Length: 388
Image (spheres, rainbow, N blue to C red):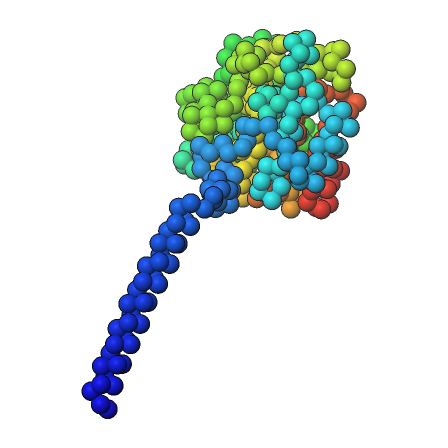
C-alpha cells in the first residue's frame, strides 16, 4: 500500500474519531439537560419504590389524611355504598397496597356539630385483644414465658389453672368464664386480681369467647414486666412504633374524640364512664384512628412487631377453630370485630394486608351492626368469598 493511502486512511480515521467525540459530548450534554429539566414527579417514583405503605416503623404515609380517589371506579362505588347505608364513622379502604378511600361519615359529636374524618378517634373494643396478644409474644421472644407456660404459675387460685396454658388463653380454649364484673377500680393489677378471684369453669372446655382470658393475660404481663398494662402498652406501641393509641382517660380529653351513639339519629348516646372502661384491662379500653389501626395490622403482617415464626404461632387457632389473638382466621383473610358502649370496630384484610377494609364507627344499635357492610365491601374489592 502506498504511503499516500496510509495518510488518507489515517486522516479519515482521525476525523471520524473527532466527530464521534463531538457527537458523544453533544448527546451527553443533551442527556444532562433532559435529566435536569424534565418535570419528573419524584413523589410518585418514591411511592412506587416502597415495598409497602408502612415500610418504616415511623412511616405514616397517607394514613392520617382524608382521601377519596374520585377517578377510581372502585373508590367511588364503595364511597357511594357507605353513604347510602347511612354509615356513621370513618372508613379506610386499601386496595392493591394503596389507600383509595379514607373518609368520615356522619357526626363525631352532633351537639358540637363536629363531623367524623380521618383524624377521628374511636374505641376499638375487643380488637384490643390482638394488641395484648402481641405484647405476650414479646415476652415469649424475651424468654420470660412460652406458649406452654401454665396459668397456675401466675394465678394458681384460678380453677384448673395448672392445666391451662398461655396458648389456650390466646385461642379462647381455656374453658374459663367470668360471671361477675368489678364495679369499682383502684388499679389495673387489682382489677385483674378481681377477675381471677371470680373466674369459673365452663361445663365444656371447647372454644368459647370469654374476655377473662385476655384480662388474665394482661395480669401476667404486669407480673413479668413489673409495669402497669398501660405503661407496657404505651412503651411498645406508642413510643417504639408510633401508633398513637389513646387510653380512655386520654381519649375523653382528645379534641378528635367521638361520642358513642346508640341510634343513627343521634338521639341516644353513652355518657363517659371511666370505671367501666378501666375494668376492661387488656380487652377494650383503647382508642385509635382507622389509619393507625390498619397500620398496626400491617406492621404485624410485615413482621415489624413480631417475626414470621412468632406471627404464625400467634395467629394459629386451635384445631377446628378460627379465633386466635384478637382475629378470626379464614385462610385468605382475617377479620376482627368489637362492640362497646356505642362503638363498633371492624377490620377485614388479606393475610399480607395489601387489601383491607377498616370501619370504625361511633354508632351501634343492639339489633344492627356494620360488620356485614365491611364484609360486603371487602368481597366486592377482592372477589374473595367471605364467611357471613
